[in-house]
Amino acid sequence: MIAIIDYGMGNLHSVSKAVERLGCEAVVTADPARIMAADGAILPGVGAFGDAMANLRETGLDAVVKQYAATGKPLLGICLGMQLLFTESEEHGVHQGLNLLPGRVVRFQGSYKVPHMGWNELTFKQASPLFDGVEPGHVYFVHSYHALPERSEDLLAVTDYHQPVTAIVGRGSLFGMQFHPEKSSALGMRLLEKFVGLADPTRKG
Image (cartoon, rainbow, N blue to C red; front, side, top):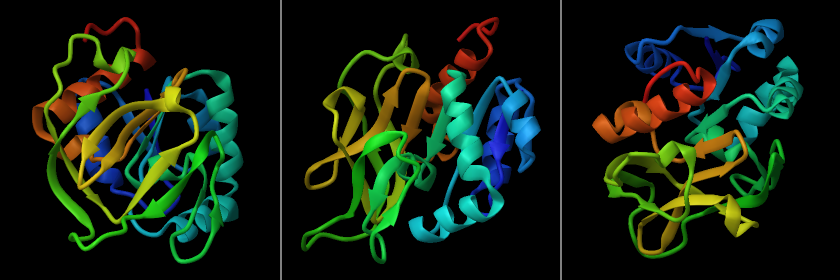
């Protein structure tokens, strides 16, 4: 079972349905016990970083996410959910994140269009169980801020939007995707399937 963590900010329904299309049970929940009992967990997110962290703290789910990550079971942050994994963000002031991965989230700077919105090609930077048997291709992004990981080994894939942009991060069983895999056609679903397979090794992916 995959827990979709409900802290009031996220495309919960579409993520849940995507997991179910892969033949895996998905439960949208804010219950710490149900989250901790899950084989894998997904932290989705849309909106502002500061608001998201405020919601997580008010509900106590910030501690639950950290506790879950410490179990070593697979945890995936999607879009804003990926950014929340980092130390801090400069979105509308400086806000502290979950600090599960060291690094900062900063706004795109330049004369080009922001937000970065649309289909962009992934480049895999290093080996990951998410990439086994997967060919890189295009996925769907919508974001005005991007993550700058401190550790190069945490950067698994990038895309290009006038500069290299962090697309997938990971360390151990903790992962983040800046794009929306549930909206990214075959490749997005394949990557999500790989994550679900880490939570349930009996699945063939």
